[in-house]
Image (cartoon, rainbow, N blue to C red; front, side):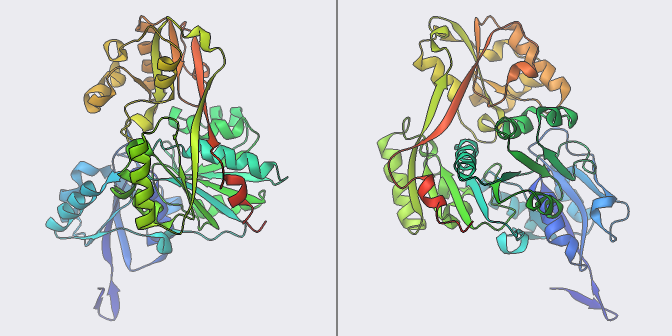
Length: 446
Protein backbone atom coordinates (compact mmCIF):
# COMPACT_ATOMS: atom_id res chain seq x y z
CA UNK A 1 0.00 0.00 0.00
CA UNK A 2 1.27 3.47 -0.88
CA UNK A 3 0.78 6.40 1.46
CA UNK A 4 -0.38 9.76 0.05
CA UNK A 5 1.26 12.75 1.74
CA UNK A 6 0.13 16.23 0.71
CA UNK A 7 -1.32 14.91 -2.53
CA UNK A 8 1.88 13.03 -3.42
CA UNK A 9 2.67 9.34 -3.15
CA UNK A 10 5.25 8.66 -0.45
CA UNK A 11 7.93 6.50 -2.01
CA UNK A 12 8.47 2.97 -0.79
CA UNK A 13 12.09 2.25 0.15
CA UNK A 14 13.37 -0.98 -1.40
CA UNK A 15 16.46 -3.17 -1.12
CA UNK A 16 17.19 -5.58 -3.98
CA UNK A 17 19.10 -8.62 -2.74
CA UNK A 18 21.12 -10.20 -5.52
CA UNK A 19 24.33 -11.62 -6.92
CA UNK A 20 25.20 -9.33 -9.86
CA UNK A 21 22.62 -10.61 -12.32
CA UNK A 22 18.89 -10.96 -11.77
CA UNK A 23 19.03 -8.09 -9.26
CA UNK A 24 20.16 -5.52 -11.85
CA UNK A 25 17.62 -6.80 -14.36
CA UNK A 26 14.77 -6.58 -11.85
CA UNK A 27 15.76 -2.98 -11.13
CA UNK A 28 15.91 -1.98 -14.81
CA UNK A 29 12.84 -3.95 -15.93
CA UNK A 30 10.59 -3.07 -13.00
CA UNK A 31 11.68 -0.77 -10.18
CA UNK A 32 13.30 1.91 -12.34
CA UNK A 33 10.04 2.32 -14.29
CA UNK A 34 7.93 3.11 -11.23
CA UNK A 35 8.57 6.45 -9.51
CA UNK A 36 6.81 5.33 -6.33
CA UNK A 37 9.76 3.03 -5.53
CA UNK A 38 13.06 4.23 -4.12
CA UNK A 39 15.77 1.57 -4.36
CA UNK A 40 18.15 2.51 -1.55
CA UNK A 41 20.74 -0.17 -2.28
CA UNK A 42 21.54 -3.61 -3.62
CA UNK A 43 23.01 -6.38 -1.49
CA UNK A 44 25.37 -8.99 -2.94
CA UNK A 45 26.21 -12.63 -2.22
CA UNK A 46 27.41 -15.88 -3.90
CA UNK A 47 30.09 -14.25 -6.08
CA UNK A 48 33.32 -13.00 -4.46
CA UNK A 49 34.27 -9.33 -4.79
CA UNK A 50 31.02 -7.89 -6.15
CA UNK A 51 29.99 -5.96 -3.03
CA UNK A 52 31.46 -2.49 -2.40
CA UNK A 53 30.71 -1.27 -5.92
CA UNK A 54 28.00 1.10 -7.14
CA UNK A 55 25.32 0.51 -9.74
CA UNK A 56 26.27 3.44 -12.00
CA UNK A 57 24.23 6.63 -12.35
CA UNK A 58 24.35 6.28 -16.14
CA UNK A 59 22.20 3.14 -15.85
CA UNK A 60 20.17 4.10 -12.78
CA UNK A 61 18.11 6.91 -14.29
CA UNK A 62 17.04 10.39 -13.23
CA UNK A 63 15.92 9.34 -9.74
CA UNK A 64 19.39 8.07 -8.83
CA UNK A 65 21.91 10.77 -9.85
CA UNK A 66 24.60 9.30 -7.56
CA UNK A 67 24.01 5.69 -8.57
CA UNK A 68 22.99 2.96 -6.13
CA UNK A 69 25.40 1.44 -3.58
CA UNK A 70 25.99 -2.32 -3.32
CA UNK A 71 26.58 -3.82 0.13
CA UNK A 72 27.40 -7.27 1.38
CA UNK A 73 24.21 -9.24 2.09
CA UNK A 74 25.42 -9.93 5.64
CA UNK A 75 24.55 -6.30 6.42
CA UNK A 76 20.95 -6.61 5.22
CA UNK A 77 19.19 -6.55 8.65
CA UNK A 78 20.96 -3.34 9.68
CA UNK A 79 20.39 -1.83 6.21
CA UNK A 80 16.63 -2.44 6.48
CA UNK A 81 16.56 -0.44 9.70
CA UNK A 82 19.04 2.23 8.62
CA UNK A 83 17.16 3.10 5.41
CA UNK A 84 13.65 2.47 6.84
CA UNK A 85 13.08 -0.14 4.15
CA UNK A 86 9.55 -1.37 3.49
CA UNK A 87 10.34 -4.00 0.83
CA UNK A 88 13.18 -6.46 0.15
CA UNK A 89 13.16 -8.21 -3.24
CA UNK A 90 15.08 -11.50 -3.34
CA UNK A 91 16.66 -11.50 -6.80
CA UNK A 92 19.09 -14.38 -7.18
CA UNK A 93 18.71 -18.07 -7.87
CA UNK A 94 19.63 -21.71 -7.29
CA UNK A 95 18.31 -21.61 -3.73
CA UNK A 96 16.75 -24.40 -1.64
CA UNK A 97 13.14 -23.64 -0.74
CA UNK A 98 13.95 -23.59 2.97
CA UNK A 99 16.70 -20.99 2.33
CA UNK A 100 14.14 -18.75 0.61
CA UNK A 101 11.72 -18.97 3.54
CA UNK A 102 14.46 -18.42 6.13
CA UNK A 103 15.46 -15.34 4.11
CA UNK A 104 11.82 -14.18 4.03
CA UNK A 105 11.50 -14.69 7.77
CA UNK A 106 14.65 -12.66 8.41
CA UNK A 107 13.33 -9.82 6.22
CA UNK A 108 9.93 -9.79 7.89
CA UNK A 109 11.43 -10.04 11.37
CA UNK A 110 13.19 -6.76 10.61
CA UNK A 111 9.89 -5.14 9.61
CA UNK A 112 9.94 -5.24 5.78
CA UNK A 113 7.83 -6.98 3.15
CA UNK A 114 9.40 -9.91 1.30
CA UNK A 115 8.98 -9.92 -2.48
CA UNK A 116 9.72 -12.30 -5.38
CA UNK A 117 9.16 -10.70 -8.80
CA UNK A 118 7.86 -13.10 -11.43
CA UNK A 119 7.86 -13.38 -15.23
CA UNK A 120 4.93 -10.99 -15.80
CA UNK A 121 6.84 -8.14 -14.11
CA UNK A 122 10.30 -8.81 -15.52
CA UNK A 123 10.21 -10.56 -18.91
CA UNK A 124 10.96 -8.48 -21.99
CA UNK A 125 9.13 -9.02 -25.28
CA UNK A 126 11.09 -9.68 -28.46
CA UNK A 127 10.20 -9.05 -32.10
CA UNK A 128 12.05 -12.29 -32.99
CA UNK A 129 11.23 -15.91 -32.06
CA UNK A 130 12.82 -16.84 -28.74
CA UNK A 131 13.77 -20.28 -27.43
CA UNK A 132 14.62 -20.24 -23.74
CA UNK A 133 16.88 -22.94 -22.30
CA UNK A 134 16.75 -23.06 -18.53
CA UNK A 135 17.21 -25.76 -15.89
CA UNK A 136 16.03 -26.99 -12.52
CA UNK A 137 19.60 -26.79 -11.14
CA UNK A 138 23.02 -25.53 -12.11
CA UNK A 139 24.94 -28.30 -13.90
CA UNK A 140 21.93 -30.12 -15.34
CA UNK A 141 23.20 -29.87 -18.91
CA UNK A 142 21.70 -26.60 -20.06
CA UNK A 143 24.78 -25.47 -22.02
CA UNK A 144 25.04 -28.66 -24.06
CA UNK A 145 21.30 -28.39 -24.79
CA UNK A 146 21.70 -24.78 -25.97
CA UNK A 147 24.58 -25.82 -28.24
CA UNK A 148 22.49 -28.60 -29.79
CA UNK A 149 19.55 -26.25 -30.39
CA UNK A 150 21.85 -23.68 -32.00
CA UNK A 151 23.29 -26.38 -34.28
CA UNK A 152 19.80 -27.55 -35.35
CA UNK A 153 18.60 -24.01 -36.07
CA UNK A 154 21.77 -23.20 -38.01
CA UNK A 155 21.11 -26.34 -40.04
CA UNK A 156 17.87 -24.69 -41.17
CA UNK A 157 19.85 -21.74 -42.51
CA UNK A 158 18.85 -19.42 -39.65
CA UNK A 159 21.06 -16.76 -38.09
CA UNK A 160 21.16 -17.70 -34.40
CA UNK A 161 22.15 -15.25 -31.66
CA UNK A 162 22.45 -16.27 -28.03
CA UNK A 163 21.62 -14.01 -25.11
CA UNK A 164 23.22 -15.29 -21.93
CA UNK A 165 22.14 -14.81 -18.34
CA UNK A 166 24.28 -12.01 -16.84
CA UNK A 167 27.69 -12.31 -15.22
CA UNK A 168 28.79 -8.64 -14.94
CA UNK A 169 31.54 -8.90 -12.36
CA UNK A 170 33.63 -5.96 -13.57
CA UNK A 171 32.88 -2.36 -14.59
CA UNK A 172 29.09 -2.26 -14.84
CA UNK A 173 29.00 0.83 -17.03
CA UNK A 174 31.35 -0.74 -19.58
CA UNK A 175 29.52 -4.07 -19.34
CA UNK A 176 26.03 -2.65 -19.99
CA UNK A 177 25.94 -4.35 -23.40
CA UNK A 178 28.53 -7.00 -24.21
CA UNK A 179 28.89 -8.68 -27.61
CA UNK A 180 31.17 -11.66 -28.10
CA UNK A 181 31.92 -12.83 -31.63
CA UNK A 182 35.62 -13.74 -31.43
CA UNK A 183 38.11 -15.08 -28.89
CA UNK A 184 39.72 -11.66 -28.96
CA UNK A 185 36.43 -10.22 -27.63
CA UNK A 186 36.68 -12.55 -24.62
CA UNK A 187 40.22 -11.36 -23.96
CA UNK A 188 39.41 -7.65 -24.42
CA UNK A 189 36.60 -7.80 -21.89
CA UNK A 190 38.71 -9.63 -19.30
CA UNK A 191 36.22 -12.50 -18.98
CA UNK A 192 36.34 -14.62 -15.88
CA UNK A 193 36.62 -18.40 -16.22
CA UNK A 194 32.89 -18.67 -15.46
CA UNK A 195 32.10 -16.28 -18.32
CA UNK A 196 34.41 -18.07 -20.75
CA UNK A 197 32.79 -21.41 -19.88
CA UNK A 198 29.51 -20.04 -21.23
CA UNK A 199 30.70 -17.88 -24.14
CA UNK A 200 33.54 -19.92 -25.67
CA UNK A 201 31.41 -22.82 -26.95
CA UNK A 202 29.24 -20.37 -28.92
CA UNK A 203 32.12 -18.29 -30.28
CA UNK A 204 33.96 -21.43 -31.42
CA UNK A 205 30.85 -22.34 -33.46
CA UNK A 206 30.56 -18.90 -35.08
CA UNK A 207 27.58 -17.83 -32.96
CA UNK A 208 27.38 -14.32 -31.53
CA UNK A 209 26.66 -14.10 -27.78
CA UNK A 210 25.27 -11.09 -25.94
CA UNK A 211 25.33 -10.53 -22.19
CA UNK A 212 25.81 -7.69 -19.72
CA UNK A 213 23.58 -5.52 -17.53
CA UNK A 214 20.91 -3.71 -19.57
CA UNK A 215 18.89 -6.47 -21.20
CA UNK A 216 16.49 -4.05 -22.90
CA UNK A 217 19.39 -2.66 -24.93
CA UNK A 218 20.95 -6.13 -25.27
CA UNK A 219 17.74 -7.52 -26.75
CA UNK A 220 17.36 -4.67 -29.24
CA UNK A 221 20.97 -5.19 -30.39
CA UNK A 222 20.54 -8.95 -30.75
CA UNK A 223 17.32 -8.56 -32.73
CA UNK A 224 19.19 -6.56 -35.40
CA UNK A 225 21.30 -9.56 -36.38
CA UNK A 226 19.18 -12.61 -35.49
CA UNK A 227 16.48 -14.70 -37.15
CA UNK A 228 16.00 -16.49 -33.85
CA UNK A 229 17.26 -15.86 -30.31
CA UNK A 230 18.31 -18.48 -27.76
CA UNK A 231 18.00 -17.41 -24.15
CA UNK A 232 20.77 -19.32 -22.35
CA UNK A 233 19.82 -19.25 -18.69
CA UNK A 234 22.18 -19.21 -15.74
CA UNK A 235 21.91 -20.97 -12.38
CA UNK A 236 18.29 -22.17 -12.44
CA UNK A 237 16.82 -18.74 -13.14
CA UNK A 238 13.86 -18.20 -15.46
CA UNK A 239 14.24 -16.28 -18.72
CA UNK A 240 14.56 -12.48 -18.81
CA UNK A 241 12.87 -12.59 -22.24
CA UNK A 242 9.37 -13.94 -22.90
CA UNK A 243 9.96 -17.21 -24.80
CA UNK A 244 7.97 -18.74 -27.65
CA UNK A 245 9.30 -22.14 -26.58
CA UNK A 246 10.42 -22.90 -23.01
CA UNK A 247 12.87 -25.80 -22.70
CA UNK A 248 13.95 -26.87 -19.22
CA UNK A 249 16.64 -29.43 -18.39
CA UNK A 250 16.12 -31.81 -15.45
CA UNK A 251 18.82 -33.78 -13.63
CA UNK A 252 17.86 -37.29 -12.44
CA UNK A 253 21.13 -37.44 -10.46
CA UNK A 254 19.57 -34.80 -8.21
CA UNK A 255 16.00 -36.01 -8.42
CA UNK A 256 13.66 -34.09 -6.15
CA UNK A 257 15.51 -30.82 -6.67
CA UNK A 258 13.07 -29.97 -9.47
CA UNK A 259 10.43 -29.31 -6.77
CA UNK A 260 12.64 -28.14 -3.90
CA UNK A 261 14.75 -25.27 -5.34
CA UNK A 262 13.90 -21.72 -6.35
CA UNK A 263 13.30 -20.77 -9.09
CA UNK A 264 14.01 -24.21 -10.58
CA UNK A 265 10.52 -25.35 -9.66
CA UNK A 266 9.13 -22.27 -11.43
CA UNK A 267 10.93 -23.40 -14.59
CA UNK A 268 9.80 -26.99 -14.05
CA UNK A 269 6.15 -25.98 -13.85
CA UNK A 270 6.29 -23.48 -16.78
CA UNK A 271 8.20 -25.64 -19.28
CA UNK A 272 6.81 -26.55 -22.69
CA UNK A 273 9.56 -29.17 -23.00
CA UNK A 274 11.29 -31.03 -20.18
CA UNK A 275 14.56 -32.80 -20.96
CA UNK A 276 15.62 -35.64 -18.67
CA UNK A 277 19.38 -35.54 -19.19
CA UNK A 278 22.15 -37.91 -18.00
CA UNK A 279 20.05 -41.03 -18.58
CA UNK A 280 23.28 -42.96 -19.14
CA UNK A 281 24.40 -42.36 -15.54
CA UNK A 282 21.06 -42.09 -13.70
CA UNK A 283 19.43 -44.79 -11.62
CA UNK A 284 16.08 -46.11 -12.84
CA UNK A 285 14.43 -45.28 -9.52
CA UNK A 286 15.47 -41.62 -9.80
CA UNK A 287 14.14 -41.35 -13.36
CA UNK A 288 10.87 -42.98 -12.29
CA UNK A 289 10.38 -40.49 -9.44
CA UNK A 290 11.23 -37.60 -11.78
CA UNK A 291 8.62 -38.79 -14.28
CA UNK A 292 6.15 -38.98 -11.40
CA UNK A 293 6.80 -35.32 -10.54
CA UNK A 294 6.40 -34.34 -14.19
CA UNK A 295 3.03 -36.09 -14.28
CA UNK A 296 2.01 -34.35 -11.05
CA UNK A 297 3.30 -30.80 -11.62
CA UNK A 298 3.54 -30.35 -15.43
CA UNK A 299 1.70 -33.12 -17.30
CA UNK A 300 1.32 -30.98 -20.45
CA UNK A 301 5.09 -30.80 -21.07
CA UNK A 302 6.73 -32.74 -23.90
CA UNK A 303 9.34 -35.05 -22.33
CA UNK A 304 12.65 -35.71 -24.10
CA UNK A 305 15.11 -38.27 -22.72
CA UNK A 306 18.81 -37.81 -23.39
CA UNK A 307 22.30 -38.97 -22.51
CA UNK A 308 25.16 -36.63 -21.73
CA UNK A 309 27.57 -38.15 -24.23
CA UNK A 310 31.16 -37.99 -22.98
CA UNK A 311 34.16 -38.03 -25.33
CA UNK A 312 37.93 -37.70 -24.98
CA UNK A 313 40.23 -37.35 -28.00
CA UNK A 314 42.82 -39.89 -26.80
CA UNK A 315 41.31 -41.87 -23.90
CA UNK A 316 44.30 -44.25 -23.79
CA UNK A 317 46.34 -41.38 -22.29
CA UNK A 318 44.31 -41.72 -19.08
CA UNK A 319 44.89 -45.40 -18.33
CA UNK A 320 47.26 -45.99 -15.42
CA UNK A 321 47.89 -42.28 -14.82
CA UNK A 322 47.68 -40.18 -11.67
CA UNK A 323 44.97 -37.75 -12.72
CA UNK A 324 44.08 -34.31 -11.40
CA UNK A 325 40.38 -33.71 -12.10
CA UNK A 326 39.22 -30.15 -12.90
CA UNK A 327 35.47 -29.57 -13.14
CA UNK A 328 33.14 -26.65 -13.93
CA UNK A 329 33.20 -24.39 -10.84
CA UNK A 330 29.55 -23.31 -10.41
CA UNK A 331 28.33 -26.89 -10.95
CA UNK A 332 30.33 -27.98 -7.90
CA UNK A 333 29.72 -24.91 -5.73
CA UNK A 334 26.24 -23.43 -6.38
CA UNK A 335 25.07 -26.65 -8.04
CA UNK A 336 26.13 -28.90 -5.15
CA UNK A 337 27.33 -31.70 -7.44
CA UNK A 338 29.96 -34.11 -6.13
CA UNK A 339 31.40 -35.05 -9.52
CA UNK A 340 31.47 -33.93 -13.15
CA UNK A 341 32.40 -35.13 -16.63
CA UNK A 342 36.15 -35.32 -15.92
CA UNK A 343 35.57 -37.52 -12.87
CA UNK A 344 33.45 -39.90 -14.94
CA UNK A 345 36.15 -39.97 -17.66
CA UNK A 346 38.88 -40.77 -15.10
CA UNK A 347 36.88 -43.71 -13.81
CA UNK A 348 35.69 -44.93 -17.19
CA UNK A 349 39.09 -44.86 -18.91
CA UNK A 350 41.15 -46.48 -16.17
CA UNK A 351 43.03 -43.75 -14.29
CA UNK A 352 45.29 -45.26 -11.60
CA UNK A 353 43.94 -42.73 -9.08
CA UNK A 354 42.39 -39.30 -8.78
CA UNK A 355 44.89 -36.97 -7.11
CA UNK A 356 43.60 -35.15 -4.04
CA UNK A 357 43.64 -31.54 -5.30
CA UNK A 358 42.88 -30.18 -1.84
CA UNK A 359 46.38 -31.14 -0.62
CA UNK A 360 47.98 -28.83 -3.19
CA UNK A 361 45.52 -25.91 -3.11
CA UNK A 362 46.75 -22.37 -2.45
CA UNK A 363 45.15 -19.02 -1.63
CA UNK A 364 41.48 -18.59 -2.46
CA UNK A 365 41.38 -22.07 -4.02
CA UNK A 366 42.34 -23.52 -0.65
CA UNK A 367 39.54 -21.51 0.94
CA UNK A 368 36.98 -23.16 -1.37
CA UNK A 369 37.50 -26.53 0.33
CA UNK A 370 36.59 -25.00 3.68
CA UNK A 371 33.50 -23.33 2.22
CA UNK A 372 32.45 -26.40 0.19
CA UNK A 373 33.77 -29.46 2.10
CA UNK A 374 31.97 -31.88 -0.23
CA UNK A 375 34.47 -31.01 -3.02
CA UNK A 376 37.05 -33.39 -1.55
CA UNK A 377 39.55 -34.34 -4.29
CA UNK A 378 38.08 -32.40 -7.20
CA UNK A 379 39.50 -29.04 -8.31
CA UNK A 380 36.81 -26.48 -9.29
CA UNK A 381 37.79 -24.26 -12.22
CA UNK A 382 37.36 -21.01 -10.33
CA UNK A 383 38.73 -17.78 -11.74
CA UNK A 384 36.84 -14.62 -10.86
CA UNK A 385 40.04 -12.57 -10.96
CA UNK A 386 43.54 -12.74 -12.45
CA UNK A 387 44.84 -13.57 -8.99
CA UNK A 388 42.46 -16.49 -8.59
CA UNK A 389 43.31 -17.80 -12.07
CA UNK A 390 46.99 -17.64 -11.06
CA UNK A 391 46.21 -19.57 -7.87
CA UNK A 392 44.35 -22.18 -9.92
CA UNK A 393 47.48 -22.61 -12.03
CA UNK A 394 49.68 -22.83 -8.92
CA UNK A 395 47.44 -25.54 -7.48
CA UNK A 396 47.72 -27.57 -10.69
CA UNK A 397 51.51 -27.15 -10.87
CA UNK A 398 52.05 -28.12 -7.21
CA UNK A 399 50.16 -31.40 -7.65
CA UNK A 400 51.89 -34.72 -8.26
CA UNK A 401 49.55 -35.58 -11.13
CA UNK A 402 50.76 -37.07 -14.41
CA UNK A 403 47.81 -35.64 -16.28
CA UNK A 404 45.10 -32.98 -15.84
CA UNK A 405 41.60 -34.00 -16.95
CA UNK A 406 39.53 -30.88 -17.63
CA UNK A 407 35.74 -31.17 -17.50
CA UNK A 408 35.20 -27.44 -17.99
CA UNK A 409 34.07 -26.45 -21.52
CA UNK A 410 36.89 -23.92 -21.96
CA UNK A 411 40.45 -24.45 -23.12
CA UNK A 412 42.30 -24.11 -19.79
CA UNK A 413 45.66 -23.92 -21.55
CA UNK A 414 44.72 -20.47 -22.88
CA UNK A 415 44.41 -19.13 -19.33
CA UNK A 416 46.51 -21.23 -16.97
CA UNK A 417 50.27 -21.58 -17.27
CA UNK A 418 51.19 -25.17 -16.48
CA UNK A 419 53.70 -27.78 -17.58
CA UNK A 420 51.20 -30.52 -16.82
CA UNK A 421 49.54 -32.04 -19.91
CA UNK A 422 45.82 -31.16 -20.06
CA UNK A 423 43.28 -33.48 -21.68
CA UNK A 424 39.87 -32.02 -22.48
CA UNK A 425 36.72 -33.98 -21.67
CA UNK A 426 33.82 -33.06 -23.94
CA UNK A 427 30.13 -33.74 -23.39
CA UNK A 428 27.18 -33.31 -25.73
CA UNK A 429 23.44 -33.86 -25.56
CA UNK A 430 22.43 -37.12 -27.24
CA UNK A 431 18.66 -37.58 -27.40
CA UNK A 432 17.15 -41.04 -27.03
CA UNK A 433 14.40 -41.84 -29.53
CA UNK A 434 11.43 -39.53 -30.04
CA UNK A 435 10.34 -36.86 -29.29
CA UNK A 436 13.60 -34.99 -29.81
CA UNK A 437 14.70 -31.37 -30.14
CA UNK A 438 14.35 -31.42 -33.91
CA UNK A 439 10.66 -32.29 -33.63
CA UNK A 440 9.82 -29.66 -30.99
CA UNK A 441 11.73 -26.90 -32.80
CA UNK A 442 9.60 -27.48 -35.90
CA UNK A 443 6.70 -25.95 -33.99
CA UNK A 444 8.44 -22.57 -33.93
CA UNK A 445 7.01 -20.10 -36.46
CA UNK A 446 10.18 -18.89 -38.18
